[in-house]
Amino acid sequence: MPLLEVRNLKAYYLTSRGPVKAVDNVSFDLERGESLGLAGESGCGKSTLGFSLINLLPPPGKIVDGSIKIDGIEVVGKPDEELRREVRWKKISMIFQGAMNALNPVLTIGDQLSEPLIYHQGVSKVEATERVKEHLELVGLDPDIYKRYPHELSGGMKQRAVIAMALLEHPDVIIADEPTTALDVIVQAQILNLLKSLKKKLNLSIIFISHDLAVISEIADRLAIMYAGEIVEIGPSENLYLNPRHPYTQKLLGAIPRLKKKVERLEFIPGAPPNLIHPPSGCRFHPRCPYRFEPCDKEEPPFIEVEPGHYVRCHLFAKR
Ligand code: SF4
View 1: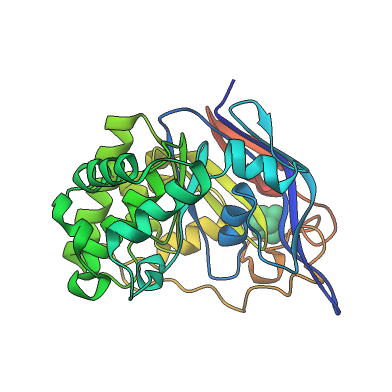
View 2 (view 1 turned 180 degrees about the vertical axis):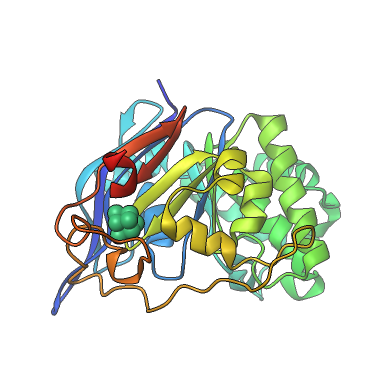
């Protein structure tokens, strides 16, 4: 049984103009110790999917249908109190986008990391201090950082402290939402290597959310590409990166500069992402797709396995 099982998940923003279908019928599995990179343009629904998995979708967002099972526990529809007690931070936790800038400037790192352990778990102050120091060391920080204030730390150190916070209750799954945004490339590489080594050391399952397909293809075992609220392609990172099948993935990868490959011109995707209150009929990518043909604007494409473990949502493959 996979550690995380997502089936036909729908998470909408219920606005006065109608539901914004930010995550629409998404299904995937994640095994223990596996990493999945979730990529796509801004507004494709990847962060909404991350917030849905940890059941912290801000209003007017709501999970309207589907199932999320973490270690066999169904979390959709579970009362918030039970989620807090059994699942959130314990089974699944999240490194929020820009979280390092949300550290409280008037509390020491130690105080803000130990607070949830003391107040939500009833852990003694001594034990909480011990646990926080252990975790600071685990992410490569000097345990003495415990006494420092956020403004005394560099961006990379703050991000490490935020990662330590996400690991405090020993979760099985971590969702890392753009964990390297706003960091310079050297620190970015250090943080990604840290997450990679934590995954190995703790047998963690990690979902990396990023708009930067090149970065996550380096560190994720599998990649999932989202477009307009749907997963349009999913498969082993190397296969998908070297041999993308979906026209949208091909365009995304064509827009990345390559050092080792002579590319005449970088690709771009014409048009704009669709309005998710009224997404396009049939294949949601059809208004921007150079290969669209007869059924594309009428029929939803099926998910087709094009090679072992590599699935694509496109009529081109159904035809074959
Ligand atoms: Fe393009 Fe049609 Fe495939 Fe959609 S289903 S990506 S429109 S070819």
